[in-house]
Length: 261
Ligand SMILES: C[S@@+](CC[C@H](N)C(=O)[O-])C[C@H]1O[C@@H](n2cnc3c(N)ncnc32)[C@H](O)[C@@H]1O
Image (tube, rainbow, N blue to C red; front, top):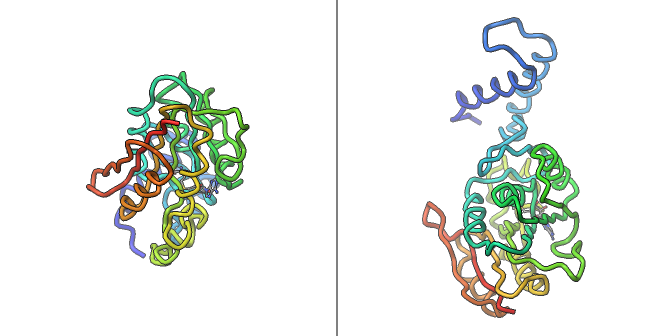
């Protein structure tokens, strides 16, 4: 497969080599550890591994996050979820980020709102490995990660004024049409969610209510075709002020709702 962004990718890899091995900017002879690293990267790129896994990091909402096999690479469209969450945050109460993956949303919110406690939850041990690595890399004191199924790791007394999630939302059939580089390398658990892609969203909407403070906001990233169905799920579950927010490509991207309780 061709690499349309090859020149930039080469630049980023060289910058990373300079940082990792403290190489001077001037020309010099490459030592064998540096050459071994380069060789390993080239082999992985030839095997069509995603560039961000090979580089080992990705920029997301003013943060650099460590990523690698086993965790979804945070996508630029998810930055909109963070923007909306910062705007919706009422100024008090804790935030819960479900399906946290690398911790992208939880960490970006904790960084932007340093006086707010943020809890991130993911079912995948591999994803949580990256979230914890990111937490120690970024040294944020206001984030805690738990491993488990949606809200199950929480104690019954925990309450949140804001709940975010970028859950898996790809339908089974649609998953089979995704580019091979995604299907081969990124976890299926992070992407696919039942016959219509809404299995996890339905559960989040149902199971979150007991953990939400009065007037809490729920913000969910959704698929571009899922707006009407998600609005129906939210209204049927008794949420108020349900609406869909479009992304910069004018596609449905975020479902927002308020929980009066
Ligand atoms: C689309 S990824 C989002 C990752 C991250 N929030 C981001 O935006 O980059 C979905 C995540 O949901 C997790 N997940 C899937 N089913 C789950 C469940 N039942 N409970 C908790 N996490 C789950 C996956 O492991 C994956 O990390």
